[in-house]
Image (cartoon, rainbow, N blue to C red; front, side, top):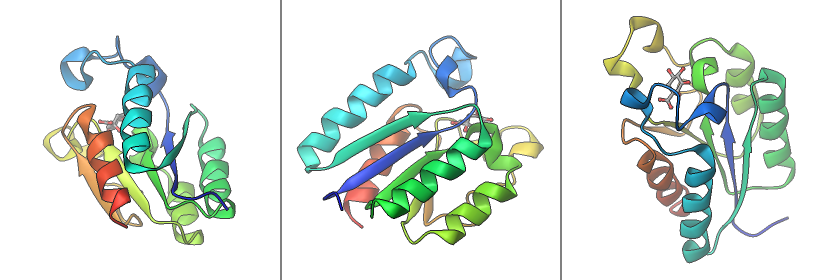
Length: 145
Ligand code: DQA
């Protein structure tokens, strides 16, 4: 068991941050966000496992892995799978590690199909709408768990 281990799990298209719809998601790349999260985690005495995949099953596997590793929390930005994935919903319910839903944008102010979150319905809480800072705010939340 790792002390204060936090998984940061990212879903489809988040590897395109930096150039992907910058008016909505900003210009920071996922690597930049990962570096900021790692720096803040060090200050908080936490260890980060940062991952991204465009494939649903891989995200499910990382949730299970976080549970097996007895992680403190998972920060999950599931991208579009947020709004479609019963498998991710079930995976969050199947593990005992608290999952914090993260979004750069605020899905509730966007298209109606983004208003439903299968992740949020199972998550401990949600942080959305603060751009790349959403990840740091979620990390602070995880530090308080
Ligand atoms: C997102 C919001 C989702 O609706 C979208 O599909 C994404 C990014 C966000 O971080 O704002 O891919 O999760």
